[in-house]
Length: 84
Image (cartoon, rainbow, N blue to C red):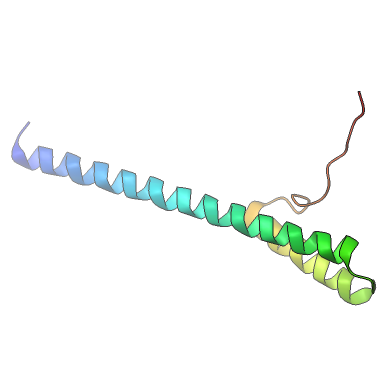
């Protein structure tokens, strides 16, 4: 392998590793956002004393944002539980 080929291969490898790092950072950021949004959504559903149109609007906005991030609007909704 010539120096030019070796340099090109090294650059390609560096770009590949940088892309992997960026994707991993983005996945970590999305997971952190989902965790925080899940806590906020849980507070709006279970923690607030005053329920009403404002809480419904906030929950809807959170669901819209989660759908934009993940493509799944119900990502933060409680899953079904089974006994047995």
